[in-house]
Length: 234
Image 1: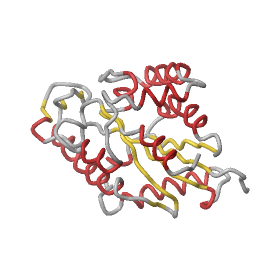
Image 2 (image 1 turned 120 degrees about the vertical axis):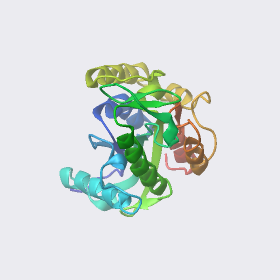
Image 3 (image 1 turned 120 degrees about the horizontal axis):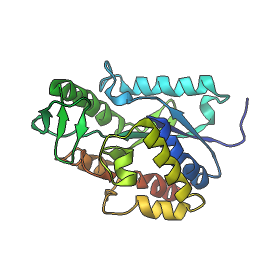
C-alpha cells in the first residue's frame, strides 16, 4: 500500500513515551506521517546485544514495524530512536549493594541487590549506545538516537524515582495535554539549558558519557527539532 507522505519512525521503550510525545511530534512533523513503534523494553541492554550486533537488532525492529503496518522501506524518511540512559555510563564504584526490591537510581549512585548484574547491563548498554550514536543510517534511512537521563520521567517531570506503569501513563497524558497545540512552548521547555545539553549531536553524547551525567537530569531531544529545521525538512 503506497503512502503519499513519508514516515518519521520513532522507536521508543514504552507506552508512556508515545503518550507524552506522539501528538507533539505529529504537530511538529505535520508534513509527514509520524509513527511510534513501542519495543516494550530497552533494546540497548538486552542480553546478547553488543557493539557488533546492535544495529542488526535495530534493523529487526524496523522490519517488524514494516511487517505490522502497510509501509515499505522507501516510505521511511527518518528513524528517531529515544532511549533512557539509566546511569549506564557511571563508574562501577557508583553501583552499590543494598537491600532493595528494585534497582533505585539517584543522581550520584545506583542501589541494587546484585550490583554485578547492573555492571554487566551497563557494559552492554554503553557498548550498544557507543555504536548507535555513531550510526547515521539503518536500512537505507537516516538514523539518530536521542537520550533522556536518567529516564523520560526525570527529564519531563524533574522527578527521579520509580513510577508504576499507571503513574507513567497518567503523567504522560497530563504532559501531552499541557502542550497540546503549543509545540513552540514544548520546544522551549525541552530546550531549557538547565537540563538540555548544549552542543552538536556528538558533543551531547560525549557529555552524557562523562562522570555522573547519565544519572543526572539531561536530554538532547531538543536536537530533534533544531536538526530538522537546519536540514530544511519541515
